[in-house]
Length: 147
Image 1 (cartoon, helix red, strand yellow):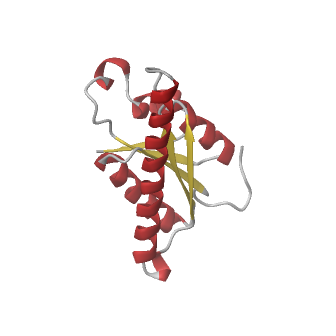
Image 2: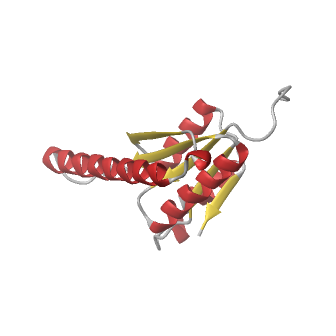
């Protein structure tokens, strides 16, 4: 649908998982958002682990929360190092779930204009398909996969 009076993206979603590739993707997305005057939505979906009992599940959830807290601290620190004229408006989202579905849901909710994600560093994704490949195949937004 055409929107009168808009020029360029208004929301860019970047998926994070703490890997080097995802951190490069976040930096790339921040540059895009800065140059386009767009809001940056950084999202970490805490993968659900179906293995183990309640004790293991609680430990995994706590570990994933610590990862989310660490990512948020790194983002804040990087944002504070930027000169005022290069700062980006950003928000951090984190929740448990399937990473692909979590990114899709957030991108739809925010009416994202694009998604940026790091290339998968896991060998198993060559067989099953990475989150990035699945997002590209969904064809809902322009997707940039950063190596």
